[in-house]
Length: 228
Image 1 (cartoon, helix red, strand yellow):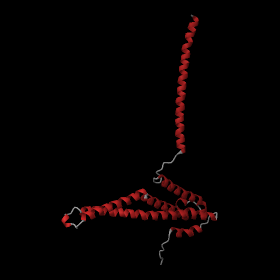
Image 2: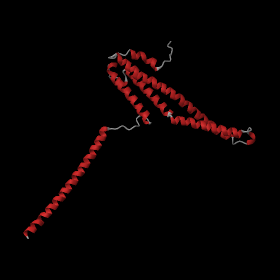
Image 3: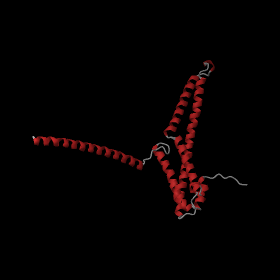
Image 4: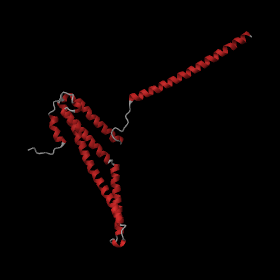
């Protein structure tokens, strides 16, 4: 009977990578060091971020529940409450409020929620890309072998990595950063220059027409003076 064995992604795909028939043996090493290493690295980042994120969120959630409960108990009849309950409830509320604020501040300061979601998405994207390449399915369906699809696979991995870097250093989500479209900007600038040149030509034409008109008006006056 088949027994399920819990293996990491590294253990599952390492033999597959070693057995890929590529043009050069260095290509197999490139896949290990650029693709497999990235998957393992982002898995480690995801798990580490998840630990801190879930821990802080747990404290915030529990504290948010305990704080109103403690305050509501203070509304009871003072005769029914233990001695020094006011001091206990005051300092308990203060400590819980401070703890909740600090934990929530750490989550926001280090962007733990955003980083956790980002690392999780990157890991799954890389894994999906890898399995499609190994199986020659999806976007690699038309490739006859792994050697033919190797460069296309490397390009896809680099694009995923590039998006993650842009997101990490821009402080936004992937895809939010506006890219500079050179062709579009060049076309817009050319249109502006064309309009400007057209306006300048019109101005020059108006000036010439005005000068010509003035010359034509001055010629009869000179002729009249000579005749007189």
